[in-house]
Length: 382
Image (cartoon, rainbow, N blue to C red; front, side):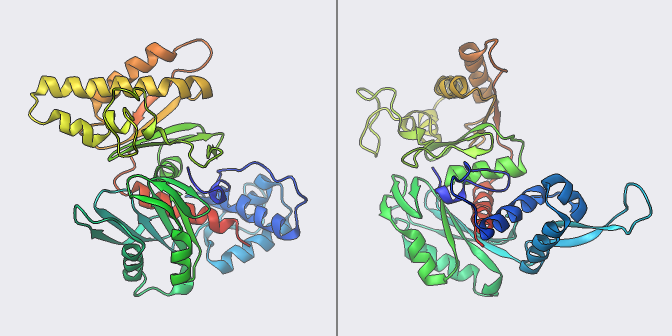
């Protein structure tokens, strides 16, 4: 679901290259290896990084010097040697004081959110642009928001701009976004021409999953599902995002279990998951219902969700299913019903029990993930 350019680094890895590595490739890889170990909050000395990466002392010193100059990392203290009377070693960590990122979230209905962040995606400034019910998001709206966020910024400190989009992204082009009403929109070129910094466009669910991976509870194997205005998912296998041949891996919202009799979807089909268990649909169903009926609607949604998750959980042997969504929908009733149904459908001696849990990363998880995507892209640059 995200651009191929961001599937490496941090420790998210892409399949290895088959061509012979050039010196610049080696240097870029070494930089990524070292940054991986420090991101997001670890502290190591040069000697420790050398032992952990297998790089020589000279190679570590050379790469670290470049990263210090660039502002990616900083020296922030000393650690005494474990043995002997040698000189105390300087600890290194990610530098959150010098480089900045602009992060944009287009996944909220009638709202464009933006933030100026540090390298860890921590927001330093936040802005939003509210849209009327009949107003579509366009490139001009995004440009105006970025203009505001960069008004007092030293552009030399700006690593890049990251935009989280609900839909399918290929090479910076939004191929299809039903939520935005976009098709083949080259947002990357528009923004890079205007601001002359690298721009990364990524699927919004992929961005939110990255926040859960680095700042939440997730490990390297994860099915992540976002339930909101629509429904989308993203998957990690051994820390490699599953992108798909058409860059649409995770587009489960428009899978239709009932294409003949289900409710009509804006995509043109009937019975899509977004028209059955998205937050808006469930809220509409609960209008005027008493507490017993509301509980039954949420329980039914949880069971339906688990039935959809059973196949990827069994197919991929993943034991972690993380759900991000509003508390009135993804609540204890939803999670308990989903867990019971998933247990009934998948428990076996072949793999561990898959657990369905709620994401705890907060309302700005997508914005933070869009910033992480920029860091991933930047590390692949020389």
